[in-house]
Length: 182
Image 1 (tube, rainbow, N blue to C red):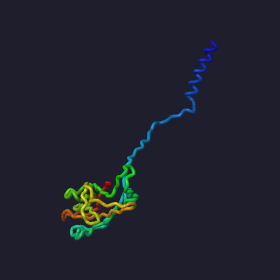
Image 2 (tube, rainbow, N blue to C red):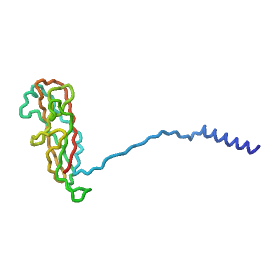
Image 3 (cartoon, rainbow, N blue to C red):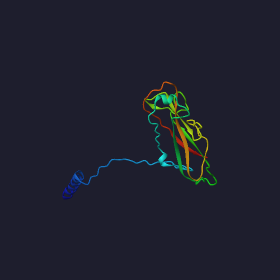
Image 4 (cartoon, one colour):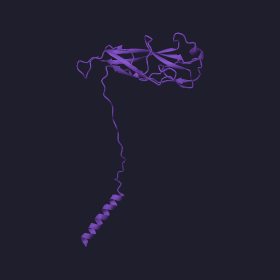
């Protein structure tokens, strides 16, 4: 009988200690997912050129309609730095050239012009290289010859009227790009 009291006391004491313990810890599950992609690239796009804002400023419909000689053009560039032309992964492989693919929603009237969003209507934006050759959206540019170190690739963005019905308002366009090394 004495042993039974001790067993009952032990069981009761154990449950009450568990139930009223201040050391009980409550937790919630979670997880962190880490990922990435390792690529070999001959160069790295300068971080200042990852996101560029090209400002056209205030324009009038008359300026756009009567545009002569690509008067409403803004220049921009993509700087490549740390260019190492010899492959670090594939012995004997060298990267001497680069091509860029520009991607954007094209204008509904001309698939080679970047479509704009916003209140303004009646025009698009044409990209061209430094020599004035039109860059076709979704297709690689002509080759750019690379040298070791820093390379600067120059481009132009030009406002192009689609018709005479130009509507005033703010406009925006976004173009993404990726590099191919050859």
